[in-house]
Image 1 (tube, one colour):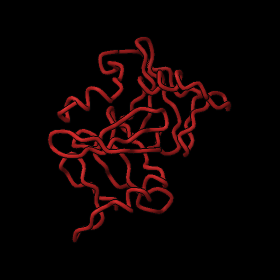
Image 2 (tube, rainbow, N blue to C red):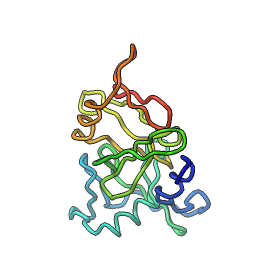
Image 3 (cartoon, one colour):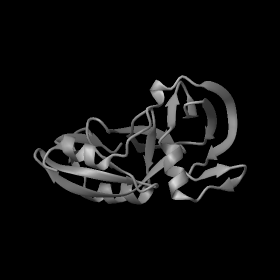
Amino acid sequence: MNTLNDLIAALTTPHAPTEQWHSGTCGLIDISIDSQAKWYHHGSEITRIGLLKLFASVLSYTNGTYTLTTPSEQCEIDVQDVPFLITAWHTHPVDIGSVIICEDNLGRHWPLCEQFPLEVKEYQGQPVPYLVLSHGLTARIQRNVYYQWAEVAEQDIQGAYLLSANNKYYLT
């Protein structure tokens, strides 16, 4: 994996082609995701990682609504904040320098780059970085990761930032 494109292709989990499926709407179903990115069905936590990854592969966010889309139906679900958390990270060298690889709570990997940048949003009254994923989805940076990043961040006049894939990503 010498280039960033090779790294993205090797690491990121493909999303189902939901944009090609023209399915009927079934309304809001009893699947929810709490503020700690735990998934529930009828009030019971879903703990099977394979099932969670399957749901994640058909999840999207558009116009303020989270939907699970299959070839036959599109159902809304309730999400308190975001469906994923970034729980770990490491760096990986590529031809343009070092890339930060973020790991989410489902064990999937996302390179911090132009395709998957950071954006700062408010969470519980505080500015918090979120990783922008595909299909309108985001993953909140968990506190332990944020503190680890704060220790290695560089500083300029705009604030603390991470350098990944030859780009600056600000933490606040």
